[in-house]
Image (tube, rainbow, N blue to C red):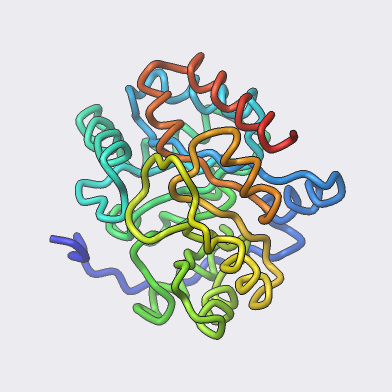
Length: 278
């Protein structure tokens, strides 16, 4: 059932060193990109897809191909915000035995030089225990994005997430009013993830015509970097959106490529990077 938690978790202690603008690798990455007038390529893949062994090689392929930030999805049995491609990858990863701790093990073993954001629903994080966020930071993660905890929905758990060593990435929908955009951004760090269109994740042929106006509204509401995702799948789309935003997120297209292995991921990542740099 959507929203049902595996167990009650009321944190008894907050992490000691919350992410700050100066200390977090995500902030430093955007600072470096800004100095070079480059747009961030943010790449999503699902941990454990197509299998645990190739997941490690896929992470390395993303970095080698030019990803600036990697979002590593923690598989969940009820991924309501995701479309068929990522839902299928999540199911396959669960069948392969992938867990929250398994995702952390991948991050630790990969030893990536680019920041990694854990992309998860709330349930797997809570099931992993009170020290789940600290362990993620220790493994090498730099941020966390929780898809199903809107600002104000659960203040205790939001405080726990926001006070961890990880940057707390927040989602903004295209229909969000400017004052609400500002409120969401104030409760986040690292960057703001702007959903390019209504609906679930997935490959699309075109981007929403209202996207430029939406990006401008969000820019007026926050100084955090803005990354746009949902439906961006081709180098041309990435290049077009990248001229408007600080970063472009590609997920479903890379997950689909991952089914063919690391070489396919490397090829697509390089082409996306070229599209952004064109």
